Amino acid sequence: MLAERHGTPLVVYSEAVLLQSVARLRAALPDSSSLAYSIKANPNPSILRRLVGLGLMAEAASAGELALALNSGVSASMLLVGGPAKQRDAIEASARAGVAGVLVESVADLARVRAASQEAAATLDVILRVNPARLSSTSALRMGGLASPFGIDEELLPEVIRRCDGGSVRYAGLFLYAGSQHFSADDIVENTRYLCRLCRRLCAEGFPAPRVLDFGGGFGVPEDASQPELDLRSLRDGLDCVFSEEVEDLARLGLERTIFESGRYVVSRAGVYVTRVLDVKHSHGKAFAILDGGVNNLGIRQMLYRTFEPELEVWGREDGQSEPITIVGPTCTPIDVVHKEARLPRLRIGDLIVMRNFGAYTTSYSAVHFCGHPWPAEVLVTVGNNEQVLRRRGLLEEACGLGYRNPMDSTGASDA
Image (cartoon, rainbow, N blue to C red; front, side):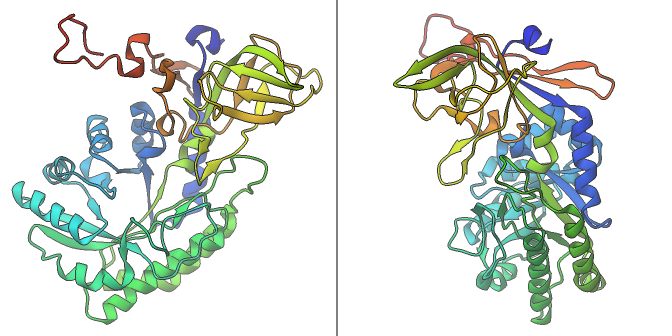
């Protein structure tokens, strides 16, 4: 059993489900468009290499993700670099590598990109991130169409486009990211249409036609029973309509590439999180089960956005329902609640709890150093049912930052 060989907590990926997720999303997008994987959803290098091997582009949101992508063999021509706080090292690395485009978020961001590009004696294609005046969005985490630190307000676009002089920075197109966890196909379709029509207005005002349009993504994956499935058939029908009515006209003006981005939809269903019951106790009339993994690995208690009750299974047990029991993690905080009053077969110490749809925003979106619990192992089960360790279980000396040696330390402790 994987849990016995690698310990718990443990993240297990299914290669078959990963391939199915990519295929389903690609089938919902227009044939002429490209799909870019948002590395932030799951930065495991082996997962990234597999996705790029399927022909996906990649989107890096920091210097660290850029280095990860380049070191993982991602071709620079298939790589976008974004983020609202790009540092000079990330921009210079982008220029040296010759990435497909840099997503620019403000006038100051453009100035930094220009300076770094000049230093590298290169020309960078810039894709301006739009904060639209109007937006169709019912997502829990909106990132446009309101006062926002993300993107360039729509009315400022003409000024910023004029600043792209074609020397060290060259205007390539526009990018719109409406938000995360969209369950309405109509919202995604309407935002795609909005960006196309914004481009047409800019062209009518004499600005150059975009060569690239990045429509973002935010394709929703249900995290609990309250959330619906995204209707992929409606999404494909709506996007095909937009492409035939809008994108084809823009292509005649010079549009060369259209991109959609996704992290969560691509990897979420491919991963399950496995943890073990360490204790079962009662307090003031309530039952609690304490697990060896919780919010230190699971990005499920995020203020203002991501608070949900994951579906739980007790591995190998179907012996009826117990009284409601609250499932908590191992860290020393009352926030470490995995599920409030879950109804499960009566739990025993040593039981394995399985949580599905945790291939995205798990360890990468969590307080992994809090209380010093080792990083969980990550294992892939291949299509041929072989087992591959993608990341070994963390060592105790790597927890809490202990692997980072203080240069003033004379004890001779080694780096992690």
